[in-house]
Amino acid sequence: MLTDIETLANTRNLTDDGLKALLSTDEYDGTLFSYADRKRRAVYGDAVYIRGLIEFTNYCKNNCLYCGIRCGNQNAVRYRLTDEEILACCAEGYRLGFRTFVLQGGEDPYDTDARICGIVAAIREHYADCAITLSIGEKSKESYRAYFEAGANRYLLRHETADSAHYRRLHPAGMSCENRKRCLYDLKEIGYQVGSGFMVGSPYQTTENLISDLRFLQELQPDMIGIGPYITHPDTPFAGYENGSLELTLRLIAVLRLMFPYALIPATTALGTVHPKGRERGLQAGANVVMPNLSPVRVRKLYSLYENKICTGEEAAQCRGCLERRVRAAGYQIVTDIGNPVRPGGEI
Ligand code: SAM
Image (cartoon, rainbow, N blue to C red):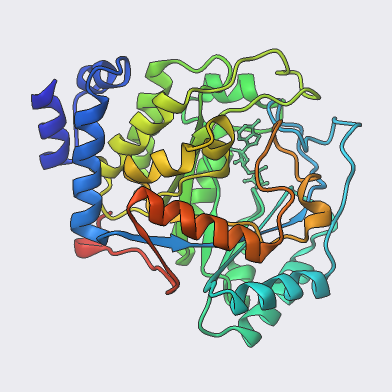
């Protein structure tokens, strides 16, 4: 197995059999994580980039079977932030040292292209030195282009699962893996820095599915890769399913770091939700981004994708301070620059 880890570290690739063996046991985790940490330090040192997350709407027209803000969840209390509230989150974020704002939300029909472009343009006008990341789901190429021209420069859209049959089991008819992938390629072509990723341990997921996810990412070559454990939500059709595992998520973060040395990989909130030290462990397995929440505290609990989500009660400044301490304790340093990906030779 050591040979497999070395092969992965040296060639950024491994056979399906090698990956399957590596993902199926915890026996080599210590070695795998230390190779991943070494690789991350060689490229990014001990830097951890921060992205200020603004969860600006929990209305969603989609009905993904795993998600707490699916339109079919009648128990969800819906909210959307006004333009002024979003700009106030950015102002507070800027004051706290954030130079990336991530606007994330459900696919809210209220968010016309004109509204999104207006918000993006206003943020761009006030904060010329910041990156603006959108994470608002599947749109037409024309819409993506309009947001880009208004000033957005990054887009996060997890592919969720690269296997069409698995995708169909997680989503209602009318949503498809093919459209999600089309969106990702459109975004790349327009010139966005693109982030993709998947849930670990989603219902019906197999190790083969995870290998397909890695292969898809090798094809897409995204700048950012976000993965986190699937966590159940009581008001979804998947209420009875188990959460994804911390260990498998960490193992995949380490594999991703070795496959994509230059990628920006967050230690996600979901990782911190399944284990109190989940985000620290994620950093030590190769992650190099954290995404503290800048949303107003009154809406935090309402952006409820899954149960027991952490960081729902603290003001932005408290979240920022808490993460700073956690990152330092894990052996890294938060940096406040814009944190663009390093891309030698066009490869991540
Ligand atoms: N609407 C946008 C989209 O589709 O990309 C952004 C919002 S969506 C809620 C953000 C991410 O939350 C999804 O890509 C999914 O991976 C994650 N998510 C949703 N439900 C989850 C759950 N139960 N457990 C873990 N992650 C979940």
